[in-house]
Length: 96
Image (tube, rainbow, N blue to C red; front, side, top):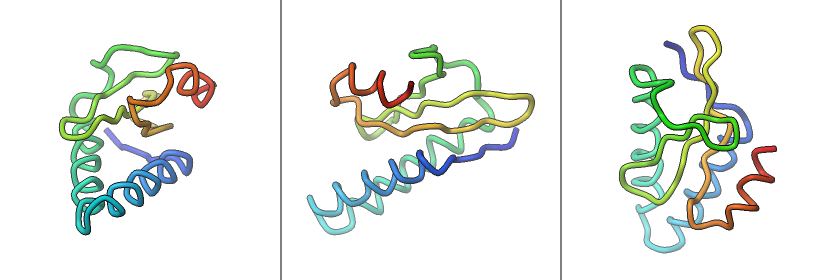
């Protein structure tokens, strides 16, 4: 299965990197390594996660982030990587 990270999701990852890098030098890199590891797991586990706001949602193992994706044929498209601590209304609006 091919995994494609859309531009919006790439921007979400950069925002998360910037936030964690400001907290502690090197933490941003650890954030990206962790999230990319979670995203890579979609090659095997795509489609098994619960559906929220019309997207499958994979919860990150190490950070309070959710990866929202859709499966089309043999391609997984990651649409957003969002902080779970955000207001659910904001998340719903972001995914609409």
